[in-house]
Length: 393
Image 1 (cartoon, rainbow, N blue to C red):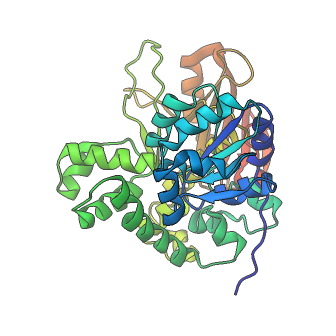
Image 2: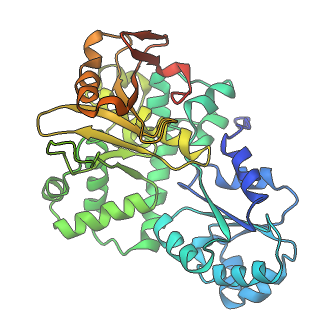
């Protein structure tokens, strides 16, 4: 049996800090991203309750007051979206017994959970998001962070901590997601069509979202495709990167771009079963883009910050993969281009220069993230290898 490696998470420091500031802290994120391990490690003195367990969930549903009475000094409560009514009782409890760091909640379905929190715990809970492992977290743990392995294995902690075969784990992850979460969240009678829909989404990472095309290719209605996409977004499978909307005198693209929270799952869905396949895999460049975009997202989320990211594309074909809003200067912008090549070419910066001319003095930084391992500055462009780490620094 593989020996498990403990992988420190960047969100741990923020989680502890928020618990000193709020009576409740809620940590959301994909299943198997490590929420339970993070919270139990951060608060070893708090008792633990998992609402996925039928008997525990039944108790919380039938007698929420009695359930909370078992934890007079608070608790870590997992998958709280399974008993949303419990949040109202937690509100009453923390209002009656003031004190920070009483309850640490986790959830893996953001829309339903956020609606319940808005109603019951507004102003009483900090909201944090834990995503799969970042490149930095893997590197700092001394684990394989090579590009092809990252694209193949993704960032779910069990794969790396226990040295498990990614293709097996990701296949099981997807089947479990379909069989358990989907049947809880919505009645999906067309499971074959839904699986096809997710596979087509994975084949279009880094592309503009075209729901009509997806629906047509799967053979379902536009309404069904939209409902399925919302479900994937709600359960932290797909991530939609919004476009830049500010009017600068050109007609801008209005559709978001489609990515997966975990690039390994996207690669698995496109048929990758071994990292060697990635060498000649047609979507490799888009998977690399997915990886880097989510690295930026993780570096903000895992520091407890909002994600100020979008992309730029106009009707004239000027495009930048990422626009980072407010780079330390109010109203400032950072422009990022992503290229999977292991060698930098000056042509990579063409879009940055064009967009920079349009956006003017607001642009504080221009960066190309590429598949190499060298960092330097060329003609005012920061050239950053994926293996170098923190792209925000």
